[in-house]
Length: 215
Image (cartoon, rainbow, N blue to C red; front, side, top):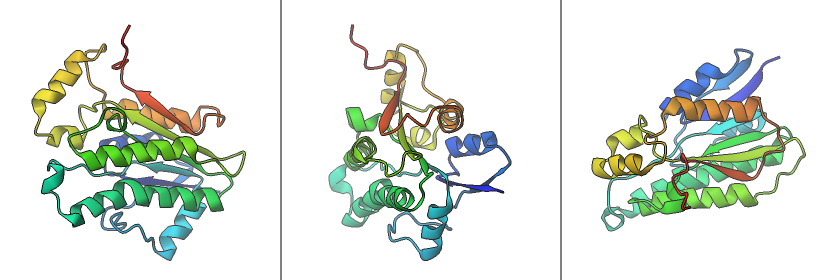
C-alpha cells in the first residue's frame, strides 16, 4: 500500500533533491504553482482531502521581495502573508487535526532570527518558527519540525538577490567559509523524517555553520 507525501515548493532545488531521496514505495504529490495557488489560503475540498491523507508533509514554498517595504502594494503584502504564513498554518492545522500520524517538516529561515531586507518575509518566517515551537501535537505519533538554514548559495532566492556584496560578506564571515547548498538541506530534511526519532518535535533547527557563535 502506497503512503502519500505532500511536497509544496517542489520545483525548488531543495524539493528536486528531496524527491530523488524518497523511496519509490511512497506516492509523492508535488503541486505546481498552477495546480495550487498559495496566495489563496482558502483551500479547495480536494486539496484539504489530500492534506488529510498525507503522512509526511514537506512545506518548502515561500516568496521574498526585492522591494523596500513602503514600495510594496497592499496586494503584494497580503500575497506574502498568505503564501509565507497563512497557507502554511492552514496546511498544518488540517493535517494535525485529521491525521494522527502526521509528520510535518517546514523550511524556515535565518531571516526569522536576524531580520531581512524584506521585512514581511522575516516577520512571517519568525511567526512560523514560533508556531512550530508552540503548536502542541494532538497525537503521540505526530511530529512538527522547522529547519532554518543560513544562506543557500544555489537557491533561486539567493541567486536573484541584488545585494551580492552582502551575500559574499555573509559567506566570508561564516566559520565554515562557505554557504549551504540545496542538496545538503534536502538530505537533512530527509534524514530527520526517515532516519530519526519522532521524539524530535516542536523545535526549530538552525543550520548556519556556527555563524552566531561569539566566544
